[in-house]
Amino acid sequence: MCVDDPLDSSKQESFYPIEVSAMVLRTLYNILVKRIGNRKIGKVVITVPVSFTPKQKKETIQACKMAGFEDITSLEEPFASILEYQREHHVKDKSKIIVIDCGGGTTDVACCIFKWRWNANV
Image (cartoon, rainbow, N blue to C red; front, side):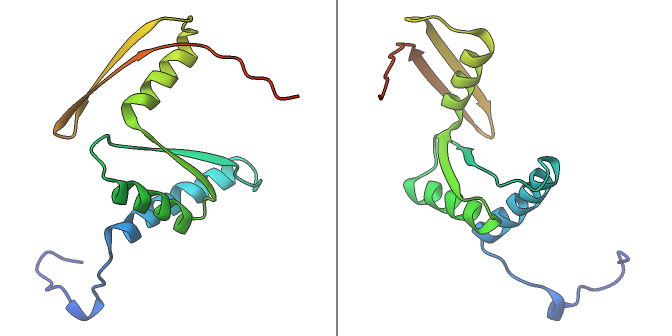
């Protein structure tokens, strides 16, 4: 399409934000399915900004379902960072961690004290 060409409004479509999110997630879903060899995708965790309302979190999970994901959990972004840090650095019991997440016009701060509990179901 050239810059001088007018837009043909008869060919334009309107989408709700949840639909656009689902389109992006569907692309990621298809890439993942190819990468893991067409096996079933198990549990999925999607991160959301701390500022998301319950409705926005629900719609994010709905967009994941529209994209093909099934077993979905949402996690606020700073807590996802804490869990990844713990996994990477083998954080010990009673360790204190603070995450400062700057970006997107907000700054989120999350503090955590790790307390390990072992539960065994027999």
